[in-house]
Image 1 (cartoon, helix red, strand yellow):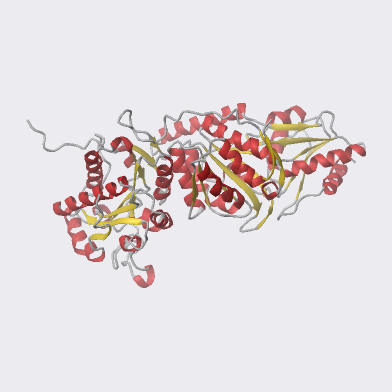
Image 2: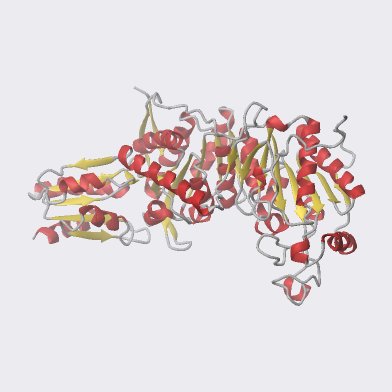
Amino acid sequence: MAVVFKRPHALKDIPMHYCPGCTHGIVHRLIAEVIDELGIEGKTVGISPVGCTYNNYEYFNCDMVQAAHGRAPAVATGVKRVNPDNIVFAYQGDGDLAAIGTAEIVHAAARGEKITVIFVNNAIYGMTSGQMAPTTLVNQVTTTTPFGRKPEIHGHPINVCELLSTLKGAVYVERVSVHDIKNIFNAKKAIKKAFKVQMANLGFSIVEVLSTCPTNWGLSPVEALKWLRDNMIPAYPLGNFKGKDLEV
Amino acid sequence: MGEKLLMKGNEVIAEAAIRAGCRFYFGYPITPQTEVMHYMAKRMPEVGGTFVQAESEIAAINMVYGAASAGGRVMTTSSSPGISLMQEGISYAACAELPLVMVNIVRCGPGLGGILPAQCDYFQSVKGGGHGDYKMVVLAPCSVQELYELTVEAFNISDRYRIITMILGDGILGQMMEAVEFRDVENIQNVEKPWAVTGTGMKREHNVITSIYIDPEVLEAHNRKLQEKYRLIEENEVRVEEYNCENADVIVVAFGTVARIVKNVIKTAEKEGIKVGLIRPVTLWPFPVKTFEKYATVPKAFLTVEMNAGQMLEDVKLAVNGKNKVDFLGRMGGMVPTQKEILDKIKELIW
């Protein structure tokens, strides 16, 4: 019998701890499929963040380093500078990357560090139970914006791809989503290209993945996918911001 | 004999690190240690190493964390407020058992304070400036020659025990020029790091560097393992200079540059018929407790002299353990104790 679908080798055969309907599992799988297809598992080093994915080092078969909150791009810099032949990726959430770690991501991009960042944006702090994130939408209710995010009080959301694409060192910047099959395929393409940009030594690459958090959004998994489509995509337009024409 | 040069303390730290095989340096500018960075920026490319000026001390220590995880011989240097910013990374690296070398060329605090010499970061270094039960080896050189030797040794200690080693100096030591002999670095040990994240090569299980242990039993077991390592270091790595302590009327306790002032005091006192001894802890942690046990009842009193409000004083009192009087003389804010002040205090203690 022909096997048509199986667990990627880069992913360990253990149950993940994510909530039902959470899309982190999909993003993990896409990264692992890309690592398999590029044949780079043996030289890849991943950096785990702080947040819901703090222990995703348990899920990947490649070498992994767990980093302090927001510091993954700095840790990735250190790893890559010691062993430039390694392929180094950092997995970060929106609080990690766009709040506490803003300096580290901006400067890693500005330096053009040859690392790949997978930035999962679900517009909320998941791990600590649903506080406002830098990417929380205007009027979105969270545990720290119980009456909705008001720009005059809480400021505006941060569009990370738009921000980083102004930096010369960031050579590949793309925003994707995982709310339906078509977009999942697009997301994989972007992640693969981001890794290939690093393999070609071209500079810093980042893929922002719009993602759901049914638990903290207070929605069912299906409702959450629709909410992402209807609310997040208008605020965070999908597409390539930089490096579309890079041949890799 | 090695090559003998007249060099500034901060530059000697950098050259010593290079000779000890350090090939990765990450730092952020702060006075009075910036010459280390300047030197590294020039020297690292010459030896095929990496120099990165980070966007902050927080980023610098996390780059160091990554580089140490990948098995690199790595160092960062800073000064008091910068070291405060690094405490998060220090605590994580201590838990993840990463070997790395740090230098703190201390300035006077608290706050932004001033850039003049002080020893007010003793507690921060020795008692744990970051969160959690951890220790780092703290070395306190008192001359430019010793800066060289202890910087080399710091890398060996770090690799041997998978621990952070910190050189604690002050602005006098960092800024002064003295003759230094670059003795052959024969004792550089190259330690295998099979735990490092270098890529599995599809030949082994994946390596993980982490400092998070959610299961309390596992975390307690990890803490016990760390504590066992600390006990081993206390057993093996104590360094101390004892000078003139036999039959001393007063034993002065001082570390770093203050100990040099005390040595001059000892000579002056001798002319006046007063026998003064010196205990100079070279490792501030592990603290040379046994030396104090040996001399606890010898002098009429111990006198701890520091450029702070009395920090090592607490460890001296614990080590003397109530068996003798322990007095204190301290200057703060960048003021350096004079020989006369120290001698007057000694006389006050014995008369």
